[in-house]
Image (tube, rainbow, N blue to C red):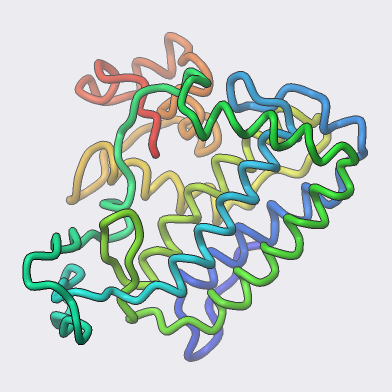
Length: 255
């Protein structure tokens, strides 16, 4: 469902809206029995994955409502003046772009308190319709906020400061990876769009390899995203297609 941004609309925000719209449409079409199937997220059922997305869209809403409040700057941005009353010794926010928003993390084990909470919270909904209603309510609000956001406005999240447009771009990776997780768990679910897969691939490679010309990797987008993030093991041919320095560091879970 990828499209060229309308005149005056930021392409990163349009990409966010496309990726989220496709993911929500896929979830909305799920039969109730699909929520009890394993997802592509290790240890999580589809209902757990959908519950995690509720947390994600809350994060989007909170971040868009949290302007950078200290004298921090995003890459290439004009520094923001500190709010009145800001302490002089307050920790400065770390400026990042879309790739810098993500870090390579340890593979999830389910022991992290929030990760462990998700299955219990998902089960508490009982009827999957209540879970999807909540997700639709919050997801729609987050999309409206993102659609109306100034892409150059600096926002704060998790001690980082970045442009709203870069925050939108970062979340294309999140929506696309979890869309692939949904496809893995619910057979017949439409896949992410080619545009979302390509954009997520480009960003993930920047997270892993750093800035500069991306390495040429002859592996389809969906397969590469799954392999790099440890969602599945690479075949011998796929492993040979990876640059050695990337192959040697597998996997690269992001968080």
